Image (cartoon, rainbow, N blue to C red):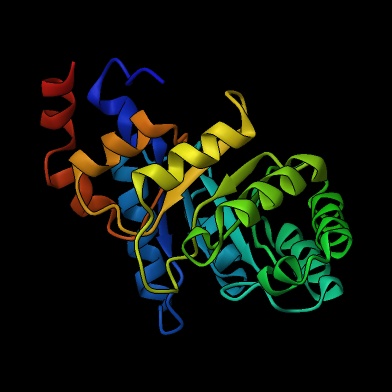
Length: 230
């Protein structure tokens, strides 16, 4: 995948994320202000903060992404569906749902697929990203999970929640890209702390970067790193 032509295009890969349980309304306001200032692609927040984020980002192209089944993905499928419907009602423009890893490890692919299809249906044609935990999965499980995501009607697969230990690796992103093919979305998240790593993730196949330190990444020299890489 070729790098963007201009430094300003790189920030359009960034999904500025704040999922911490103690995140205040003031911090959500800061998150959205930073996204507006730098022109990030999206902000990603917990469902109870969707309405506020959507209000703060009115009349911008920045998407509001709602987390569903976060962070463990172990809630019941009906709960994920209801959570998705509520997030959409509150103004979410995209959904990111955590895959039920325990059910996948059980080999219960039918359950996993049904749950994902229910979320996609509830999203009502909004884009859905399915979050895996690649650091907790074998290669075979990662392949199975990606194939289920492809079959579900979702539009993107993500590498991690950032909740568990271990960062997303470049090899992990390359594997996701290899499995889902050239046209499907791949989000790299967890461990992207500077411009050099952001660029490396894009080169590995990422189409979106989930970054909890989005502004710091920009300020660390994304533009100069991009200029050096060209």
